[in-house]
Length: 155
Image (cartoon, rainbow, N blue to C red; front, side, top):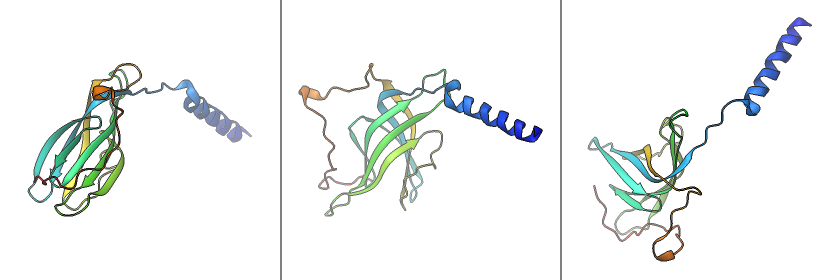
């Protein structure tokens, strides 16, 4: 009976902690992502910075940042970005190789799996105003576009 009461108290305590009495970490949207890329063949590490919706090249990869969140300084540090990563090779259509969230504190949690390149999130910059929306230039709505496979690949 005493063991059952101990388990009940422990269960109630856990429910209270996880049900809303623990502090909630609110992440703020930011307008730029700072990424790092590794070329495994040359051992070259490059720091990339991209605005939301902007495409940046790293070797044959084209990285598009869709969203970037960063927790405020009083919370546990964390930056997370939603990325689209395409492989663009000459004379071939672009191929989507990654679409999802990457976390600065846990780069291996949801990593890009590629034989030549690694890409991970370092930070988010330029906190967006309340509502977290960037205005498109000339009042146009931003569209998700596939990378242009006619561009030359860097490397």
